[in-house]
Image (cartoon, rainbow, N blue to C red):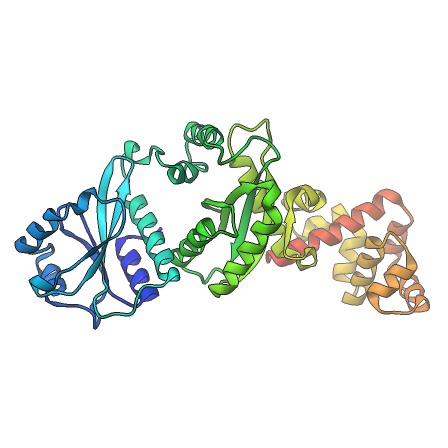
Length: 387
């Protein structure tokens, strides 16, 4: 979890200017490293840990603590540079202000504002220590409580989202789990999420993170456009998307927790199995989901399928690949040969030279199914470093 210092440091690095967080009484909470944009007001505030009295009086006259939107503050008469004051508000009022110097600096870009909004979101979470502050109020706050740890809060937020027509019960609601590169900072991930939530080409809402994946929710009818928007925004921000998994809400579920878990599971499977094409819905991954739930190790493979164990210990990679593709192709020789880029005679030659335990498994329905599933299980274990 980030702290206040992490927030100001990462935001300053992202937007190329120093950042300060101040409380409602203009006392310093955190400040980024001093940059070329720092003026005397900033230096004095850092030294005294709060804004000087004349500056506080001026800020009080602007009623900044009542503002719900960023405000440009002109400090030239007090010997300072223009600033942008970005309010951080909770369910019950003003919590803090993010201060950014804008005078004599390049204009902030759309990507900068996304990073600022992400920083506001993290700061709000850090400051919201009371239960009252966590109660959902605005539509965005409601969506932000859909994965709350308290089941009653999750249910209440989901009921409210349905009431406000942001979501619907059942298959019409789709959860997206987006697995991005682990090198992307939390602030950059939140900025990415914020851009996706506000862009016109996307109708999804960011609802949090679970199991190291970013979670969004939207309507099932917009799934194609939403996935395209995710990938487009990721490319524009140089964010690597490893996999996208989706899951529909069940009309029997009172919240989105199960759908989020299923979407995250789908993303994990897609990441582990590149052949799945980078994205998939959990409803199409039944066998893979079953295999992902298997808790075992290499020693148990000999019990699950002696034939699969033989291919992975005594056989070579060519034999293993040949059998896996052969089973994938349901024994359709022409299709299997096309996938392996070999002649029909070569396939028969390879099959004839398989270990006896493998040939026996191919002649038995149950053993053949176990062999096929265990070869897939090995792929999952290899991808997760368990084999």
